[in-house]
Image (cartoon, rainbow, N blue to C red; front, side, top):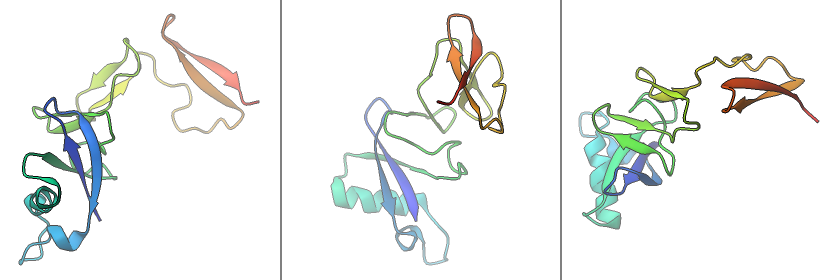
Length: 128
């Protein structure tokens, strides 16, 4: 199953659609983004803008979600910046905190961490 993001004129994702792999596979058995775009334009109108995306982030860095932005310079989908202090990692096109998460693998099953923007640090909390 292929996935395509619909963009508005500001490159904001306004929808995500599933398209059968058979639709985007050409006569040489190669997947072609353009075939999926043509299919969606035939369904919904030729004035729409679509870009392919993927769950495993192999296409355009990140899976597109409604509200994300497509950056044509980076050819990537980028989520909204969660906090003013967070910085965009150019390689992954994901926002990273200025202080690394204390439990990046999620091994601490008794606690969770909230970001404290005022103090630029993680606050450890107990699951209740």
